[in-house]
Image (cartoon, rainbow, N blue to C red):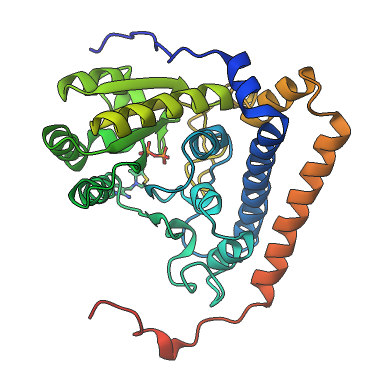
Amino acid sequence: MKKDTPYHFFSYNQENIIQRLGKEKLLHALKEMLAIRNLEIRGESAYQHGKVGGFYHSYSGQEAIQVGCIAACGANHWFTTTYRCHALAYLLGATPNEIMAEFYGKTTGNAMGRGGSMHLYADRLLGGLAIVGGHVPIATGAAFTLKYQDIKDQASFCFMGDGSTVQGAFHESLNLAALWDLPCLYVIENNHWGMGTAVNRAVCVKPIAEYFAKAYDISSYTFDGSDFFSSFAAFEAASKEVIQTSRPVLMEAITERFRGHSISDPGLYRSKEELQNVLKKDPITHLKETLIEKKFLTEEIFKEMDKETRDIAINAMEFAEASPWPDPIVLEEGVFS
Ligand SMILES: Cc1ncc(C[n+]2csc(CCOP(=O)(O)OP(=O)(O)O)c2C)c(N)n1
């Protein structure tokens, strides 16, 4: 039986971050989180109305992690993630229209309607990849390329669920990255569940990053993934370490998944009370309240932001609906062989 060791969150000074980022950047971060949430709400609704095929994995509840990452590190790196990829694609430049059209499987979609919700891309996003743990070697390869090409101011960012950390590919990647000094940030988004299996029934250590990082002689950063400031601080420090030392790091965001594993999952393994407690840890509410307290934001401005981002998502649904289906004749175009 594993020990139930408490998390040691990376410590930071919130006031200092507020001072350094200032009102405009903080409001921008909040608006990005709202844009992601509103896009997810409409995507989920389209799925429930039978407009979206395949699976749909919502990022609702986890927004502070990737928004904090891009706010702290910028987008000029290489990124890889799982099927839970909508937010990262958006943050790296995919538009709400092309994301929604990809959900619908239309030609105007981000992957020309061929990938669906699990396979989104952007100039710096190597994928939305659906094999659990299978994308970790790809991120390691991107870090190897940076090192090989002597690019010193960029890193490879690999987002994954806690489920990836029990796959062989994860451990082989960490071993090589540590052995060859590759600039990679491996980021575990621990939302406590792998489909319907609780993390403590699947992973033999807790905290995951702290234990596994020791095995590979690299640093770990554990942080509160429901808090924009905690996330920003951890990514800022971790990326600095990776760029300065060219050593990989292992990060763990403790976060909450607001929906079922995918939208077709009714989540019967969580009681109503448990879910109510989870929903209380809303990263948007947390940042909103902090900004109101700082007098950077009012309830009215928040409502306007919410409406503006909601309208963008609704327009994206209309765009997707009106877009044409791919012609079956193009099915063999752009394939490997
Ligand atoms: C190699 C492999 N095994 C099983 C699956 C089926 N599967 C899809 S998602 C998932 C759970 C992954 O959970 P986690 O890594 O914690 O990510 P989360 O969905 O919570 O973001 C599983 C088992 C898969 N896609 N790939």
